[in-house]
Image (cartoon, rainbow, N blue to C red; front, side):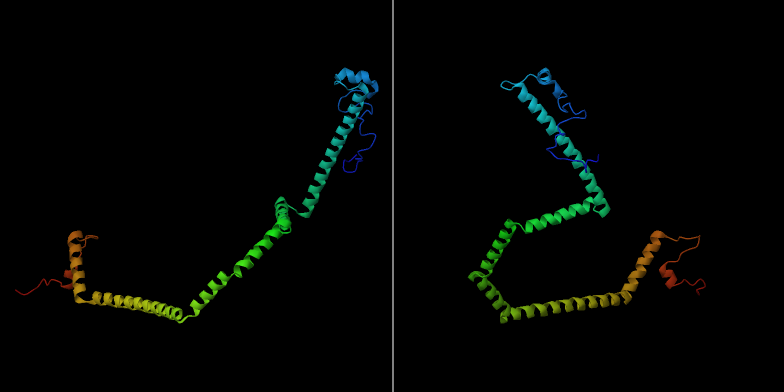
Amino acid sequence: MDPVGQDINLNSPNKGLGPTGGVDSLSGVSMEGGATGVAAVNTLPPGLTEEEAEELYSELGKVEEEINTLRQVLLAKEKHSADLKRKLGLSPLNELKQNITKGWQDVQTSNAYVRTTGKLGEWNEKVTGSELYLTASATLDDIAQSEAYKKTSETLSVAGQKTTAAFSTMGTALSRKLGDMRNSPTFKSFEDKVGNIKYMVVGPRGNGEAVQSPTETTNPVQDNAPF
């Protein structure tokens, strides 16, 4: 029989009987043998009669049988629960999220959380309604509305704008100055001198062709100069 649908009545008279109906499941001792079988397995403790021991063994067998039955029923219920969750698409991660959400809701509705929230609200009202807090807030509002504060803000704003304009003007002037220097005769003469020095150090290069120096290119030598 399926453990889910079987009878789990703890008061059932068949719970204490094993598969044969007359053998105790725990001790394996036949209850039909009476006190002789019980005494043959274990020595009785002092003050315990054979009849009492027989009753205790019988009750212990019933309890063990009930435990095994409940264990089988629990395993079947857990398997059935896992199948239902699988069909509903409830993964372990989703189940964990639901447990966390439910736990947080339980915390928010707990008496301790409600009392703590109420106490914090009372403290906030006391602080914001205190004379010191109101005085400090009024002082800050007065400072923000004062003429000195407004003038200082305007002065800083104007100073920032002037500084930005000055940097922009200086950058434009430097660019123009560098352009003028590059186009000046002095700078060009300096470039020619650097080119001549490079020619003397490196020398002619290429496919056997002579490389003329910048000076020779600028001032070619006349082969047929008159004597």
